[in-house]
Image (tube, rainbow, N blue to C red; front, side):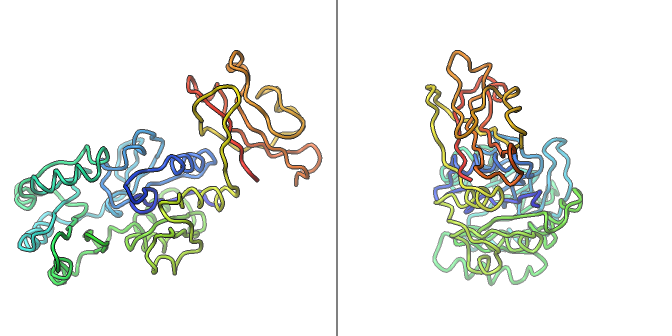
Length: 361
């Protein structure tokens, strides 16, 4: 049984326009409500997680900067750290300066961008996700003065041939780990991979490898695959990741994360149906429970003997749940034993408007 899902952000949860689709957000919430611990596992620094994810909250642990940090969001404590010493990071940055690259670092959970033009470009490209970025005139000089360790260095390729020149330059830094993407390279400590961070978190939580699942798309997700018992590769993933995956799902523009969660972790496909009670928005507070006979009617309002429940009238919303209930025609538990899937209730979601979700078993 899967108890933890480590999920990558860019290229996985986020689509090709750097947006976090509502369907993916709902799927992540569905996994959490089902008792699965969802752990954002990203190359981003902690304060630059997708804004939609930060606003929703509810994530107890976050693996950031490619595994340089594992943070307990409830206590604010760091559970695992593996960073580049300040002096070594400054050496990389000085070696990169003649190559006319875009330079950024992750330090103390912040995202630093070197140069006013690159800083402005980053804010435009990532929009509200980049609202916590910081401008730096010369990051290497700041490291000399402050001596802060560095979670991650990112070098961006803007000119023809800069990728090859960067590879040649970084050959002198074999003590560091590197993950190459189309337009940039991420550099971090050899002890700071998503895999080592995930293993450290799993050990702290007392989880076995077969109780951990992960999903990703890029080279920096390969170490994470080595620590998970169930591995999902996105349809847009690199071939090496697909070769090691247990399941290949749709791409990031087709909500592949939602497919992985609904079909493979929760065992069903989801379609949404709007309530007939004139309610405008949907809630995602849902859970699975098993009830004997019609006793559940005493707790959740009137339950029909068979078929789909309907939303309560507007005047009675506070007393009756807005739910969709599915009864198995031949329940595996025997006569009178049903699996019921509920979209939530007015009492659970407070003053939010809600509608029913229909889950296809």
